[in-house]
Structure formats: structure tokens, C-alpha cells
Image 1 (cartoon, rainbow, N blue to C red):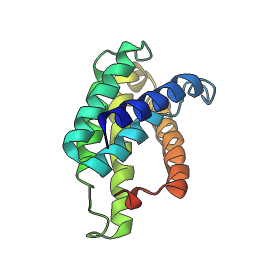
Image 2 (image 1 turned 90 degrees about the vertical axis):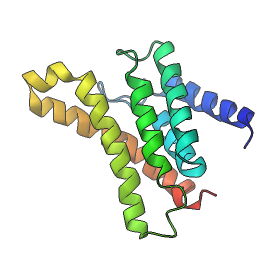
Image 3 (image 1 turned 60 degrees about the vertical axis):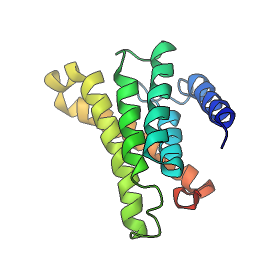
Image 4 (image 1 turned 30 degrees about the horizontal axis):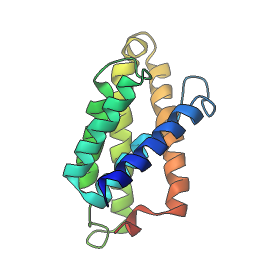
Length: 158
């Protein structure tokens, strides 16, 4: 894949995130399409590309003004890209259920880190609300990832 393909698909998903996330939001819970893109890239191209693309996409999110804590997005997207890179080529070597559990766990960890920083005041005041926001954000994005799995499964990435 040429670097122009990375830029084109990254900008396309970023614009979709900017335009559709508020429309699809339920209260303060919004889907995160860019983390799914980073996960796909890291599984397809490995840890290095996943980490670098995660950092650059996170930086783009922070610079676009949609994030409230500067530096949080590059951190969590880089972690997702790095951990997702470990799944490159592992579908044929491990049980498919473990493969699916692995990428779901990566997204769960990503949203846990995000919610701990983003909703740290809610965590202290009302822990049930914190866990509800974390669960809602995670499930909402995982549902979009599940729909994408039907269209273009992660294990078919070459």
C-alpha cells in the first residue's frame, strides 16, 4: 500500500468521524471509527505501522479540537496500534476465538484508558455512572466493529 492510500483512507474515516459521530451520539456516548481503522491497519501491516498511524491519527484528532485532553488520543491510539500489531498473521496460528477475543480486549483496554482519563471526576463522584459510560462507549464502537466484521473480517486481511 502506498502512503497516499493511507492518507486518503485516513482522511476519509476522519471526516466520517467528524460528520457522523455527533449525529450517531447517544447522550455523551459516541462511536469511534478511527480506532477501528488503526486496528485494521495494525493487523494488516504490523506493530510499527500501527503505532505510527495510531500516533498520527491521535495527533490529528487532538489538533482538530475534538479532544479535551491534549495527548490522550495519540497515547491510546498508539497503544491500540502497537497491541493490534501483535495479531498480524496470527489468525492461522491460534484459535479463531482467541483471535477475536484478542482484538475485542484491545478495544476494551483502549476505551478503559480513555474513560479513566476523560471521566476521572465521574469515577470519584459516581462510579456506577463511570462504568456505564465506559461500557456504553465500548459496546457502541464494538457494535460498529462487529458490523464491519461481517463486511470485511479482520482475519481476511492480507
